[in-house]
Length: 376
Image (tube, rainbow, N blue to C red):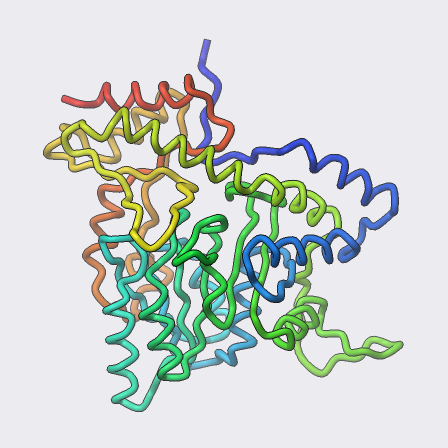
């Protein structure tokens, strides 16, 4: 009999969600917007320390709105981490702007602050600064925000934090996503909490969030008829999905602790194997271990990352390579990149392991056994 499939990061319901969904049905708040949306936004601000929030249809929608409200347009440059998912970059192209990809640092795997700052200084000397910077917080860990934030403020460049993968993490005691002009979060089905599909845009500026809500609701003006003075989008979150989000948000800390326990289990079982390494936890904050990510030195371990991945797949276990850097993606060919060797090595050697908060000890042991079995 084939063992049940172990997924990389499946949804994990708390039990609270159904009652909130039933409330939405009982009150007939099924259409977009409604009391659960308002409550989810308020509770999210309480959770993260953000001042204002707008619940939207996806993290990608949140990022697109952030770029629009940062006046990013055709021909503008936007600095962005290269080691990320394409959703961090696609909205830049929606606006007709040009991404400039920034390599990772080994300490956190996030964007190298020295490269980021140097890029801003170089462009300042040329008299052509980027319009914005998208700083990604990867796999549950905050980037090194302070030097990048300071440089962006010095040169008047809008900092947008892509915290889609880092809800529940900390940087110097605060939530990543709350330092820049905007922060964005994702509640996709594989995230640490989910609304099945959804996202959140946060900012300290109430006016920007109010404008974001307008743009996300087809930019309808306050009039008894349908009046529009700017292009709008259908980006608002539904009341039903916000109900799910409220039930999920209530157990965020439990989910973080569960994923950190998964990591510790993997670390204890695998860390002494030659050639196996782990994504480090940077000294500036808490890593949620949304995904546990290992690196495999093929020469020392005796098998490369892809061999191990295929061995896991043969046992009905999902594992995935680390993000392929954006500067290597065919769709973004020709755009400038700063460095790239660190991200390229992480892609070559990195493997994301099953990390769901509902994994059992037996599930984790299944994964460990396959990896150990590839050692030659």
